[in-house]
Image (cartoon, rainbow, N blue to C red):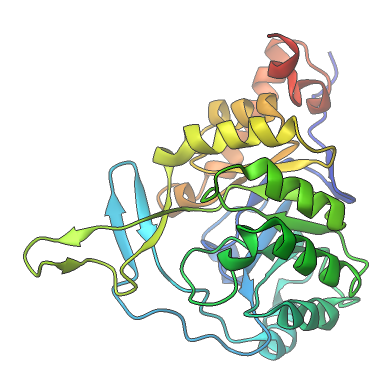
Length: 307
């Protein structure tokens, strides 16, 4: 048998591997190369970029939980101008494709960020973040209403010819309604899921542990929820899915692919295992060789066919 083919096409993005670094842990700086091997990564999704600098939330911003973590960073970033002038030149040519996660408080802000990045060398795609639970305006406010989802995605679509991924929130009654709205508005692919909203209380101070009161729960604890939502969404839309949420092994990655994801992103697990992308890549290749599977495409959504 020839070497397994792990190339994927994610909504117009041709990737050498199906493994991406999710927005957040790697930030938006080239410095990630000092800590992470990029060999196994098909793309890196940089931290959220807004039109103007965002200060983020007050500390404490992080809290460990059973099999996961809560974060309430609040999309802190230096803004579009600094990203283009300082960060992007250092990110270009790193190897993996670069997808920029974009955020805004209004539809117009999303559109301006997208327009500002359109045609910029080194930017291979955009991920529209309409699902962050840790900001007072924008973010999840757009991702819980199908009409607002359609409006922001459709407006951004008119500002750029870059491939558009839309990042969906699990904090909704039916994620497929939001997914269909994003697809109808012009999304090329969907990223799911973002974090689950949660909180912790410090019993000594008798106050919420996080400065923002609530935060986003990520890590291995949310994997079953993420997997279910990928499964549901795969049956509801025709565009490809980028699955994420608690992935920490090749076995986890295979479950997402079999549930209907074309590619997968790792996030929280990178904090304690920087070598995870390499391990997943090798695990996928070994599984395909063992089972005589030539192309990863043949595994996409296969669990739906065997019911």
